[in-house]
Every structure is written in structure tokens, then in C-alpha cells.
Length: 189
Ligand code: UP5
Ligand code: MG
Image (cartoon, rainbow, N blue to C red; front, top):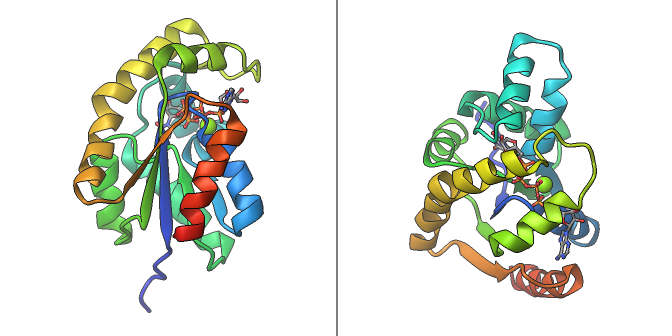
């Protein structure tokens, strides 16, 4: 039996650009399923396995976890949800290797890629003010996350831009203003 092909929207943007905030609103209004790759990895850290410990170390250092780990978690979450709704995949793919492996293993190309564009100083202020106890919300790790974003994730956005799949959104605004624009996009979509 052929694996079920899920419809997917990728949500990309730098650390603190507001991916999680906007996804939470979208799922309420548009009947989508939110899958945060970061949340799945943070959950996986608690498993107590060797792999969980490796994920914890990599997140604390702002490094990208090997594709096979993240893709297994995403694939399982999509399959177990039993949902036919489109999935909003937040914070993945983070590098070209993630992108290629996901396409190869799932056969899925995104219907749309939302890209939240935000200056670093704004993202830095948001992350330092978040206070949710994340091991990567300290200035040292935040700087590493920005570097990884520029070096590894921006090329993924550029790849999808060449395919005409990207909606670039100015994320240097209040969350309500951003959401209005995101809503307009989804109403057309
Ligand atoms: N906030 C949100 N919007 C605002 C606005 N418009 N104005 C003012 N404040 C706003 O927002 C961050 C903070 O800003 C919050 O306090 C919010 O209230 C406020 P949030 O919506 O959480 O932003 P988000 O973009 O989701 O930031 P996050 O920190 O989650 O982004 P990251 O991309 O850094 O984190 P993620 O969880 O995706 O990944 C964490 C780590 O996991 C990575 O560094 C990596 O090590 C690992 N990872 C992988 O290895 N592979 C993956 O595929 C995914 C993650
Ligand atoms: Mg997030």
C-alpha cells in the first residue's frame, strides 16, 4: 500500500521571528495541524536515550540535529495524527540536507513556504525576553543559532524561492499585524 501523501506548508524564519506564535493562531482558525520540529526534538530529549542526550547537546549548542532523527519524528507525528488536514511544519527544513532527505524519504514537496523575515536585533530581544527556560535562550547560544540560520537555512529559503513557493513576510511588526497578512495568504491558498 502506498504511503499516504500529506499536504505540507513549511514555516521558516530565524530564531525568534515568531514562527510558533503565528502557527498557533493559524491552526485555530484554518484547521491545520501544527508540527514544530523543535518541539518534537525537545520532547525527544526527555526519552532518556543516548539519542535524546545527543539532541539535548546539539540544541544547547544551536546545531542542526541529523536529518534522520528529525524526519523520523515528523513522519511518525504525521502518520499517527491520522489527519487529512494540511500540516504546518514549523522550523524545518533547516539545511539543504534536511530538505533533500525529507523530499526523498516522504516524496512530499511543500505547497507553500512561509518565511518570516526579521532583523537579528529584534529577534535577539524577543528571545532574551521569552523566559520559558529553554537551554538555547542565552546570548551565547542565540549568536550560534543566528549564524547557523544564515549559513544553513537561508539557502533552503533561496531554493524554494527559485521554485516560486515562498511567501516572504515582514516579521518586524506586532503579532496581530503579521497575522493579518498571513491570514490573507491562507485565504487565497
Ligand atoms: N513574539 C513572537 N512574535 C512577536 C512579535 N510579532 N512581536 C513581539 N514579540 C513577539 O517567538 C519568540 C518570542 O517572541 C516569544 O516570547 C513570543 O511571545 C515573542 P516564537 O513565536 O516562539 O518564535 P519562533 O520563531 O518560534 O522562535 P524559536 O526560538 O522557537 O525559533 P528557533 O528556530 O530557534 O527554534 P526551534 O524550536 O525551531 O529550534 C530549536 C533548535 O532545535 C535549533 O536551534 C536546532 O538545534 C534544533 N532543531 C533542529 O536541529 N532541526 C530542526 O528541524 C528543528 C530544530
Ligand atoms: Mg518556535
